[in-house]
Length: 86
Image (cartoon, rainbow, N blue to C red; front, side):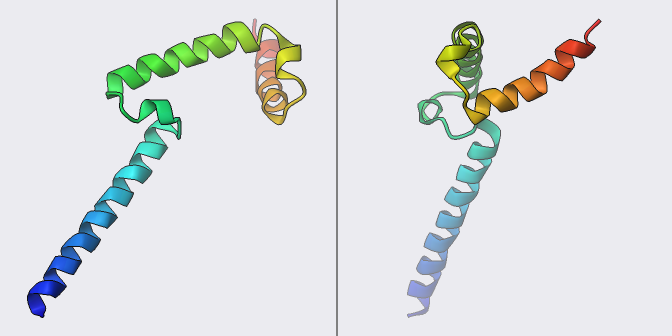
């Protein structure tokens, strides 16, 4: 019976480790499913490309973005910085 208890503790420990790894991944990389199978270097490349696409396509075409909260929040951050720029 005691051996079974130790096995159960081992499984609990593995589950805790998996959860910790998952949280660390989410904090570092966000929740984009496409990033899961990639290496860290490939994740950085993918995110750079994603950011570039967003800047070129979506921000260049405001009606495409519409009046979403994200667009409003982005403008709230961008406009004051642009206005203060020399």
